[in-house]
Image 1 (cartoon, helix red, strand yellow):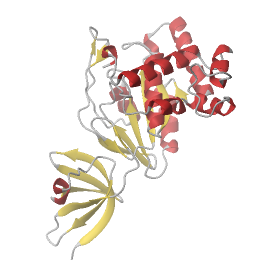
Image 2 (image 1 turned 90 degrees about the vertical axis):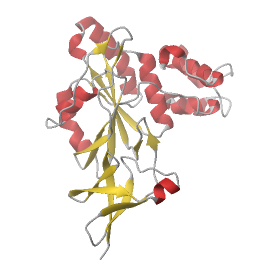
Image 3 (image 1 turned 30 degrees about the vertical axis):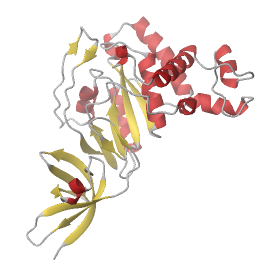
Image 4 (image 1 turned 90 degrees about the horizontal axis):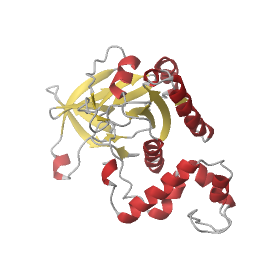
Length: 297
């Protein structure tokens, strides 16, 4: 008798798919029809599997995805835990805004974790915290200690939700996941000082049970490409711009040269930070030129 059940792909290894079904993980192969239809199951996919009379398991259907992000890809992401380092690589508001805008475009919620805060002096840390207080004000939770994060994260991840780590190479994602799940051993790597960026230490995507859902360990995003975004939509992915735009004189205001623009008004009042506005203009230029600047690749 052939049995069929639903599950979530939690891992991929050498052509096999590990699928979480209830309280067990079933190792399956994908049916040939996926190759024929040029489809490929991905970690995070909700799928159907069947077990034949010989006990062999096959992945037979991929259910509709909410999103597909990252390289390697992860499907159906609910929330991103964005790891931004205080140093090695140096803290960067430009990089932070790129990630937040990208995930806003993908309609994925974000929480921010500042890593390596113990490696900077008090004055520099205070300056970074002052910058991050603005992001708290516009709605992004910020964590400074992994202990606080480890305490709150399990209750924050709801039933079957998928949270993923993201952040620049070398920012400390593998170190953080080591803290969050002590039984996971990820190698950590030294920073490439010549490029001020890290070497990738995680090679595959894997989901680990945490709270009522899953946490994904991924190689992260070392570069964000905005060129697929429509230029006139970009302003909507800056959350405080979108809120303020209802008071702009013109519908569809791009907050550049238009009169009576509420976003520019708030920038002048320093209620929207100048750095956010400058980074918005830089991203617009990037989309107009159709390619990423070389220094951000």
